[in-house]
Picture (cartoon, rainbow, N blue to C red):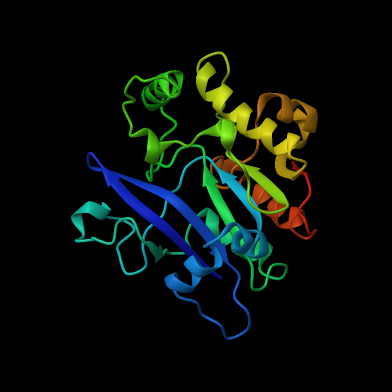
Length: 248
């Protein structure tokens, strides 16, 4: 598998505005240019993209750079272009789960927030995101650059036949209603379009409760259940398209 993405920067922050997993054929390696050719037109995207994974936010590093250092301190200058990314963290679980099912195909990765940074679910940051999303569809300025931090949920068209939701269990409608509305619009559009919806959830919470409150387990977000969640993700992708699976 190869992992590609577009990295952009604004006001000393790093964002990942587009990314794809490519599942290589035997003895095959593709370039960023070849990836771009696979998504050049609507027809190309329909042919090559089998589905979408929806995450909370990206935590990625370009190949050849240090994952433990801030990217802007490392002479990285390839902003705005597709480049190859390291296969780390949550990506390794998806790689293992999907490697036998999608040879020669792409899976698109989307994020609720494109900010490339760990632990962005603090109350202080969520308050900023919530405020931004309140004004997103107005003429007012958002604190984070709207075009590279967020996307228009109301016009979102997911790629492929399935959408695997893994944005975690941090959506809170009472504290952050505009984040909830943003996520809910995305989820409801996926359902209305007839895409196959898949996710992993804690069994005791029930599937229906998780759908109602948009609580879809994220790999690595809950240390106590990390192994159980990873196993459930693998079980989900034993089916093509993936299915909804619980963990305990």
